[in-house]
Image 1 (cartoon, helix red, strand yellow):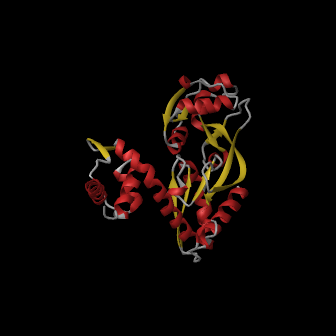
Image 2 (cartoon, helix red, strand yellow):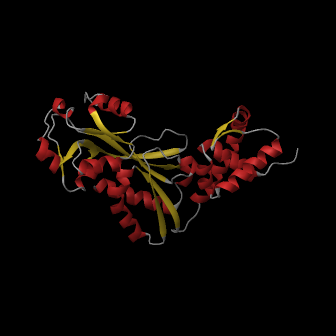
Image 3 (spheres, one colour):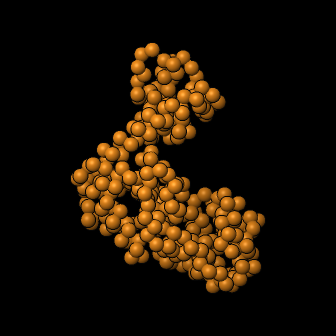
Length: 292
């Protein structure tokens, strides 16, 4: 059997791990038709069906699942090579991507980006505004600001400090409804929550806030959307202090509850620690978050 083209193997690996042709095409900087042709070419060379095609959706076939276990090691090795090469780039040019939640990206990061631009004007910074945990192994981001500790091999993190989240409402909402001062009053205060309300409710319950799933009247998978609903006077939601302090027209509710403790972690991959541009951005982010 002739040697397989790595580009074809890489196309299969990206599509299988990222779950769709569109996501894999973006990751590999290819057009979707090109990626699709590479998948078909690989299936032709192997003489097997790697994906089951249901309409426009792809799902791994049993053969594809079995072969993925073998190619994952090759993909990890290629990612490690890319990370090592990026970490050895000494110039303060190029791109650094920072991942943070959408609300953090919109309300907190701009101040930090302003300083980065002043200290490294030739550097390009890409903000990945996502509430999902970006996979630093796959280079979805170089640096991540997260509220949980790193849980993957070779990811390194520094717990910068802890912050707090509190419940807020707009001035207009308070004028119409008054200020809730107890948990019982909070549960009947047009609560707005994040999607996966069961998990969110369980988290609040674990913090000593006995709110039920049925208490939430509005939900979104976007923190920015939730916060905009609050600003428009549609209800009450929990938000990080740093975000609320940068938002005019909102009031912290004087509840008989402690603040919700939220750790702030700065995370990157070991392979990038030696990069001057990564170190510079990490230092600025760390110093600015500590100052805030």
